[in-house]
Length: 189
Ligand code: FES
Image (tube, rainbow, N blue to C red):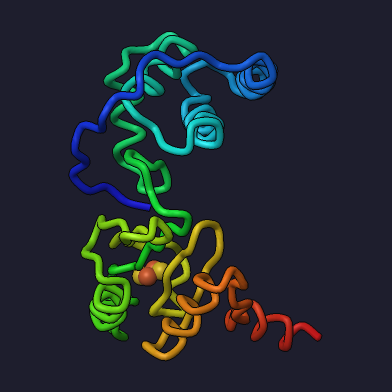
């Protein structure tokens, strides 16, 4: 998760919580000492509902927690986990921070750009992939790494990247082992 300059997103028009989401909103807000403290889980819920977060969704969240839309925008634009534009079916986030940079993040990114024929922040023509450079994803011990939707792929090589992309394209995502987790499981057992 990290900050980077985020362009003002296009607008989809005013939105409202559905009846079932309104129940979830009330439940989320009941768990926090102030309404404003619920801004991140509400943005997460909104992303689930609308797939990406534009100014109208930010305005809805701001109204819900009684704060200026600029405050919601500040939070949403800081975290790359909140999508500010339509993305492909698979959002690929490549860590570029120090541990990953030292062991080949740039090579991985260049390889993916070439393989997917897109640049940083680009969407592939088939609508399957969006590629983003991001800051540390907290898997530094198994660098270089990337996150595809909710899954981590670690200790990447250009070859494993090709296998991962081929798996996603065929609709059978590759289940790569989590090396750090496996190592700890081994030590504990
Ligand atoms: S530096 Fe890449 S996961 Fe932390």
